[in-house]
Length: 300
Image 1 (tube, rainbow, N blue to C red):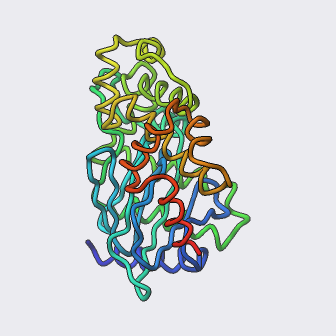
Image 2: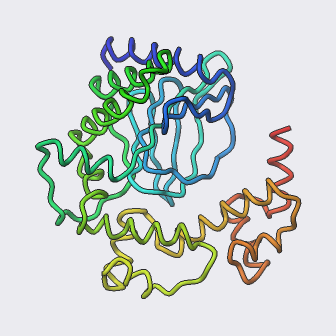
Image 3: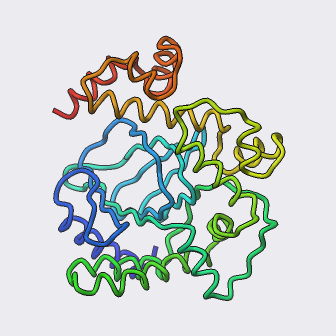
């Protein structure tokens, strides 16, 4: 990496420390911009990445999408172009050198606006591609991200300049090696756009059973095309995608409420508590009650 990139990362690290101050994920005064700080290695965390650009300035991280691993460091940036259930773990961190990162969420309509206002050539006929990628950091992207983060020191500028800087960041990413991945989520008629509709449907209806033919109709695809394209985009089948959403929500409910595993199993759509327990153990490493006890002990 160039000396200028190191300099920009140093400034960004100071801004993240100043506006977070403690471990965790912190919303900022800039809509859709979040700072993340972690001073010790933790176990794997599970969650759904919204469409977002992730940049770290200290530490290293691994993100698992189904069986696919994405490793990135301050030399890279990571992008998720659709909602994706993932497992993530910080792998390099210490109390003297905490993991520091930021996440900038975006929408397909913001991508479409950039495409309309630029001369980037797009085609709806592109084959679907994985909706997550890691790319080498570029000074043009980092420079704009730093200018965006600096707005926190001048709150009155946030409403006017945030949309401009966000647009510039997305423009730079669209010009990069994997720009086509972002293009395809915004172009009506592309296979990725159609899969995005299915992802949205599953996300909003994860607790109910559905037939694959129902999803194929939403995507306006054959059943075989839906299976193939969905797996190309998300690295999993629609049923696996639904299962991850169900189990993540079950874990959240168990952590936040005084309720038993059988009740939660029914709430998230399982008909069999024993099946729920088996699948929960497979995903999180322990049966529900033991897992929740462990998590509560960690968070004490």
